[in-house]
Image (cartoon, rainbow, N blue to C red):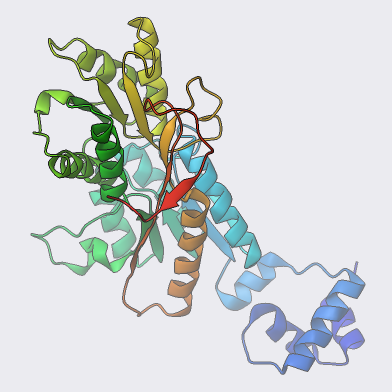
Length: 355
């Protein structure tokens, strides 16, 4: 097996120079760097990651805490994070917080104990303990998908969520677009199956729902909003609740992919067809959305891009720890299919053009 000494001899440089190239601990001339990299490739040299971490005080690893097992939406985000991490030579340590604040804190503490260089976290609906831990230990962290706002009554630096970089999709205007689209088709009683209370995505999509109603000249009726708690079983319960109203909705917006599945199950159990008996639009497009009959009209989030941007923000933070925090919001796409009641048409999506 080739050693660092072999690489240095082949490249015609010192062992120290090879170390600087591998660990980015000192500037090296481009020609010298290329000679070292060529020697590494030719000899098949495999760097000792543990030894490198002792030299640089970094492990070249990122901790990722997202509910990828229980929420398929996060699977695509994970793919984006993984691609971005590998591109820059980082490995991933992945943990599933199950959207539970107590478990969330435990897995983040475990990732911290593994000495990851930084973390990417999709926070729960009650992230106070998480934010306090990350702030207290100055862990470079990026929050994704859900925005965490700083507590207005506690300006202490350890609890300032605004100190963390964040990346997520636009939520308000895309949700409003679903509502105004349904209203444009003549619907006047449009229901919403909302997510878990406390999540920023839930609050923003409710705000978008109300904004869309107002834009269409429709009143807000709290009876037409039911929480499905961001899961399939909850979406089924919430939809059944809405269908049991004396004047049930004629159209429905579901606020994530898991609740869409639950809503479809409830509609089937009630003997209702889409869009014949009830029009349906959903937030979150997913791989099999166009395999349903009818095909699902949906808002598609840029999931992989969110993951990739989270990695970029984290690496920027590691390179410049004192720079101001940033919140990035990426545009979504309206994917027009047939579950809304529109006739079949060539599929196309529109980004950022929300009425």
